[in-house]
Figure 1 (cartoon, helix red, strand yellow):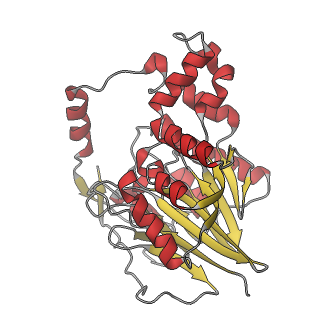
Figure 2: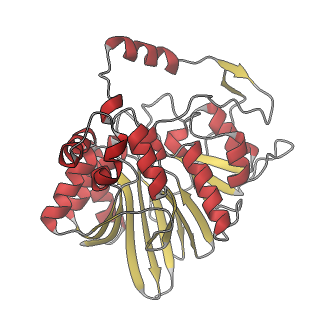
Length: 355
């Protein structure tokens, strides 16, 4: 059997955007299935059905990766763990490091109490842990430098992860209940006006993304000379850490073939400087090419994503943008195209962007 791969970004069919990605590969006659996230709990059964339908009805999945604790990534993995035999579950569990963190919390002096609190505020990964323990699935910590099948973890490091847990607004001394006024302000902030912009102009948000997003597992592979970067909801800190680590170990950017655009195409997660390093500097003129594909995991009902500034930035660097808004979207090599899976038009280049 010849080596092959298929990389799929699944439409999670939900009101809000979610991530669900799978990678099936064959190397030296050995087939491996690698699943990263599965959207919300409501989309888990759909992802299970897709894997069965398109991956020859497997009973076994080699690797399941939980990118970070958010429900639009981790929720659907409950179905995956329950419906398949799983070789390895890769996820970061903050309560495992409670003893190392306890001195940094003002309100906690008991490690067991801190562990319990962390499990309550990160219920999605606590639920996955419970399923894994009941089924005897090995759980591993995917820190920077870890190899997961064909993928290498570029971020986060253990030290960075612990810092993020301690400083998160969800952790004990920072926890505040969200009120109606908070929700009103958030809704107002999400409404932005658009302005016509010349080629090359990119207006990203000055706000930073959440600590939970910065916890995202960033995965890289170069399989059959096809370079893929899966970023989940990583922000500028995580991406910068990944770039620095990559340079240290001899992985040179740009040169990606597939770039998962972070956090459904949010303006808070990237910058022009980071994209220059990952994807290359801006082209001097409108020369739309297909040097790489930027894939956005976004729901059709989510009108806020992807942001136009982010879509523009991909085109400025010679890429094209595809989304999971209406379709599953995938890449494959040395394996026939699936019936009904024809070419999909990319997202048009926006002449305007958010102010």
